[in-house]
Figure 1 (cartoon, rainbow, N blue to C red):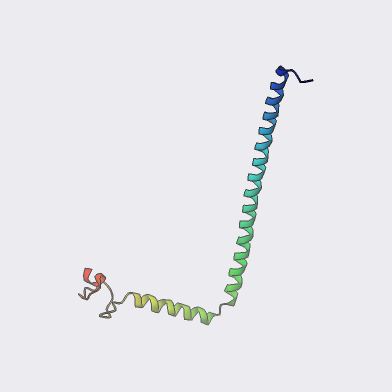
Figure 2 (cartoon, rainbow, N blue to C red):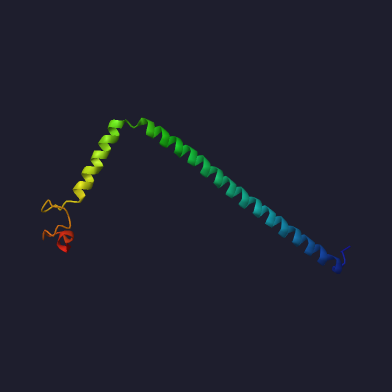
Amino acid sequence: MFPRRQNIRPRILGTLVFLGALLLLVNGTIIYSIRTSQRLLDQELGKRLQGTAHIAALLVQPAQFEMLALAVADTAAAADVCPDCDRPFFAGCGCRWAVCAAA
């Protein structure tokens, strides 16, 4: 009724080897599909961002770009001036700002 004990061990070993190989194959397939899907999603996101940037570039008028350049220049010029004495930083003016006092 029961199989002989010496015949069970090779069967169990064969079954375990088969299950191990099947587990490795399934894991490899899952890892490959995840990496492939990530790559494809990155490509799609890049295409969408490129299209959005292209549309945004078409919507910007030359006058808006000039106003933006002037605003950036004003901000940069204001950042280089000491608020106490209205002289450029590092002028050695002796005011309370550490940047000016260090000069």
